[in-house]
Image (tube, rainbow, N blue to C red; front, top):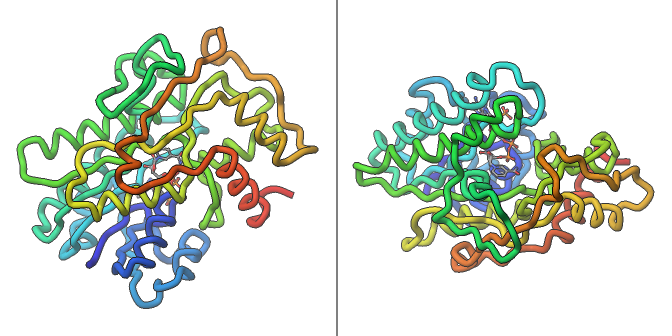
Length: 326
Ligand code: NDP
């Protein structure tokens, strides 16, 4: 069984690759530069990599770039997408285009390769939640929810809104692509992903946690978000791929917390760091309310979600091991 993982060097994808190798798959890892050992070295050291991991070069923006990577494969995990929270220059070009054109490029290659039986796309709870004005813990967000792009477009000065818009537009484009053809698409919608790093660089979600610990973020956002462990996220991708009855979207998240709660947990885990106690009203007061995300569908795949506390502990341990945190 041969599968492709796009953006194989990323946080989530590295764990997907690890699990797939452990389960005996042959993995083609698509990355921008297979010779960049800083980015791909950790993948080459995974058990089974010598025998069954092949790194391939592909960029989301190059039409047809995935044709050769996907040809003859049984399945595709499409995780690659621009994910950064700094630098707002040319957001259409830097966020939207690679996310949307890249997703369509991968799907077109998969549809052309008659061997591909299923594609698993990594989307986000950003495309699901945050579509209604009022939130409270009794509001249960499920997979039928869709975020409204109009609201995101009104927030064009905000990098988070561009990221969310890129995920929303890409996921919608993927569902549109498969509407009239016989094609098996599954979509994973994880919330903020934290936990242990396999790679030696920081991805955006781990960077946010590091900035809270070091006090680089003087005031963190007035924002409530789901948090999910990267190991659970990767496992859900693989279990969904393997379960014949799997269908549609999967919210990957059990617990929603305010950033203030994240800061409190971090204060316990790493005492002595300048973790700020204040949150900023980047959005309008009052304090953002938490809500509930249903994880029922994902739990039926066989995923048992790790607590936010344990995930943050693993994240901090990893930041120390990798030398990001003294
Ligand atoms: P990473 O930043 O660790 O990985 C992103 C991957 O996408 C990298 O391999 C990156 O390559 C690749 N990529 C970006 N632009 C291009 C491009 N033009 N061509 C080819 N590859 C490209 O992110 P995560 O693991 O955190 O995220 C993976 C997926 O999960 C993304 O789709 C993200 O939106 C989604 N997600 C992440 C969440 C999180 O909290 N981490 C939450 C919800 C969804 P390179 O290293 O070369 O830049």
